[in-house]
Length: 202
Image (tube, rainbow, N blue to C red):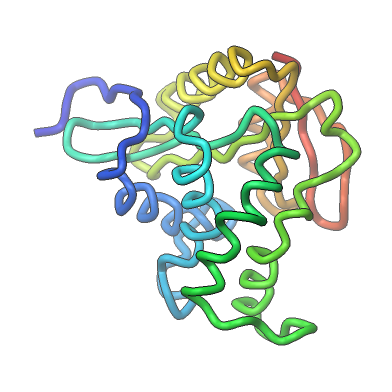
């Protein structure tokens, strides 16, 4: 039975399927992306799996007593995370998905190409904002303060690991997410194409 108040805890190996489910259900600018790609695991393999695998100390879930219904996943050191992705995660992706054409043709090709280029996470603001994160909650758990609690949990873990600031990359079309981060003290610190970077000191 679900608990009256969902609790935040560190991710476990057994959370993988629930985390991937939350990821795909919120991957279309906050909306449901199930059925959009050949595998519903693709979004999780791009935006959740690397953190579960490489950064377990900065991976947390919101547990309603039955399963994970939200998460915050991230790294205190984006540059080190990129290196680890290149060495340890990209080969795993390559074994699961075909190489996309160059240049990519379909939206799925674009996502597969993105997954093979972790270096795209390197940008000039890393000196001040070395940490980054991804946070998602199922719709029924949004707007209740759980997101703020998850963020604060991540802040503490990243700061303990030595990070002085954290950033997020948000698609310009995802206006609700931008509002969420701004309410938590994030400010706009850069733009690359249709991606907006928001940062916060820790």
